[in-house]
Image (cartoon, rainbow, N blue to C red; front, side, top):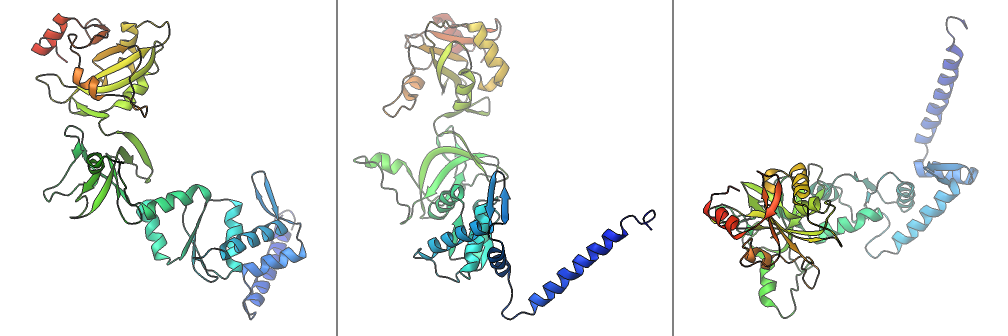
Length: 381
């Protein structure tokens, strides 16, 4: 028997344990009142309070610990004005001990619990929350401010024309939502709960931040000025600021991305990237105002090699202007308007100017003759 069926005794023992479990389960099902998981937990807490209940990473919690923590959470819930024992509660937490403690607390209070998948976002999350008819939402600390933001400050991404510097609108005059994966302007609905007070003593600037007729006639949204992108998992990524994106060679160029690439060059301290117009060309060509590190020297060949290695042709700054320091506003935002207006005209710009010359594979000084050749079209951009 031991040779041909070495596990037969283990099988008998297993079936014996299974039978005992089934009998116990059946007995508890016939109990009145019903015997629940909470009842079993409380039994174990009385019988062996110091026995390990949860092991999570380096954390260890006994039955007594879990009982004490769940009681504390239950008392905290009872103190909330919007909650009454027995109300349905939505639980929005990840895999952590607090999830179990909170569930136990709600079970003690007699509240049905709707377990929300903590990975879902935006409309999926709101749909689940609405469907479960919960009156209260309990969320992990890292998720609670985001949920409140979604509920109190409804937002959307709309298509944005970087050339016209305005949202794209359809034939009905309404904005067009940006599909997932595409960059769009982040706008937030202005409501009684989320009002926009505007700028003190500057009505004109306040009005410029308001967008009307966004998704339907008569609605009102706040223009954040941020260009964002939502991926397939509903995570949101900051792309750029409005006015900090320009179009060249049929492509959108994100100035922050180019600035980041330039910042890796040894001789450069800081870079401010923007687009400037060139007569006879559609869009704006890339230009960067940079400052050098202390005792640093501008190496046109080295900068050219770095730019060509890390940036596509349309995103490479064709002009570089060297300043003693990159100019910023009172709120430390890089100044671009004045730089854009001055362009790359050596007659207007007193700072050293350089042009990306693919023939010599280097940035070369912009002379009056070179400037005229660019304007005439003799030098192709």
